[in-house]
Amino acid sequence: MTAAHCGSVSAPGLGLPASCAIGEAKGTLPKQMFARGVSSRLKQRFANDIGSIAMLALLRPGTIGVEAGKKVREILVIGLRQQCAEAPKEVMEHIAGLRAASNILFVCVRDDDMDDQADAESDRKADATGEQCLFALRRVEPAKAGHQGQAQATILTSEWQPAGHAKLSLNGTDLDEVWRSLCAQVILGDEDGSDLEQKIALHRRAIELQEEIAKLEGDHHRAKNAQKRNEIFAKLRADRAELEKLRA
Image (tube, rainbow, N blue to C red):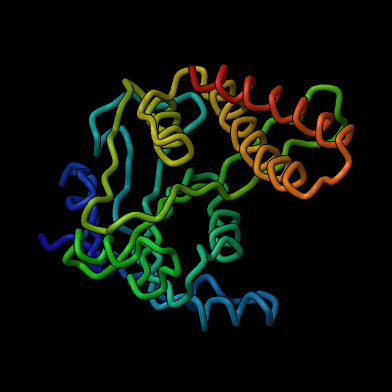
């Protein structure tokens, strides 16, 4: 069986077992099946931003040899061959909403020349596919303590990487554990899905601190008043100490 692919990416190429791969004949998903009855804005997103959609793999107890989960009944691995530079979060949100009973891991693939970062040339040299890959998933975020309202769902993504280097690991004895590990791989770059909520919270705090430090460094450089500079430096020192502690 030839496995379904999204650009140069396929389930076996990602390191997933052949038992969960979808065949090429069944893997192609017409864009029209997702774009019916949507707003004109979203219809344009499908038309302009998405080249093709493919089901790459279906992770179930019978296809990957794990126990059923209490919360997760199946995980779909869906490839989006995109024609835009940014991850198509609006499209992913819509597709995930249509399949709310399933957990979905998206594999976004774009051409290398869409990368506007300085290291794009080195990525091209390191990967013969000429493509880049990003993983994404829709995750329900627990409501913050002390805040009213329902938990919110959001699309979270990994960093872009050369498509030929993109890999996934299936870790866990049941589908719940497998999903937590996949979440950790996408969000944190770590296969360990234990204590996931705490790890994500610390990860986000580290990002906040990095942004705060960058802003404070600029403010400190521009400040003319000595007292103001000292106040900014004190905040900067405290943020740097907290970030160092998080990274320890």
